[in-house]
Length: 122
Image 1 (cartoon, rainbow, N blue to C red):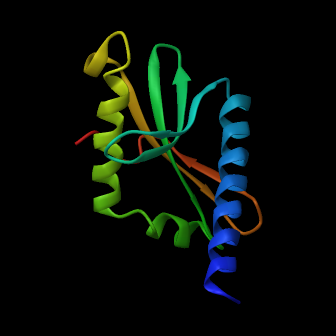
Image 2 (image 1 turned 135 degrees about the horizontal axis):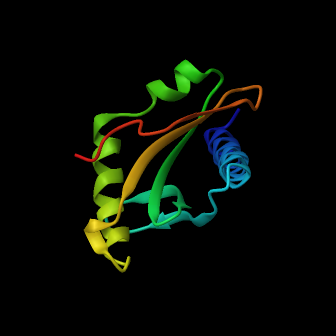
């Protein structure tokens, strides 16, 4: 399979995983405020609202939950933090806004696992 086709498949699988996770959060009563929010530092897959709190969600999709979670690197976490700070600058309370960082996993069967507070704000 050509590299471009593989990349397109991964892109569409990622979109599908994000839609699945969006639905899971909405079913939990947490509306999605932003999808693929882009700042200078990077992109946040999903941003949900939990009352006054903001939930930053990193979505990972792979054949297994273990493989999906293994794809989260310290460098990526740093980018998520920096991008979250950019987003918080748009909020009325700024960096005083209550936040949570979740990791949402989708395996090859389409099953979902959400890890709340997966990594603290650092």
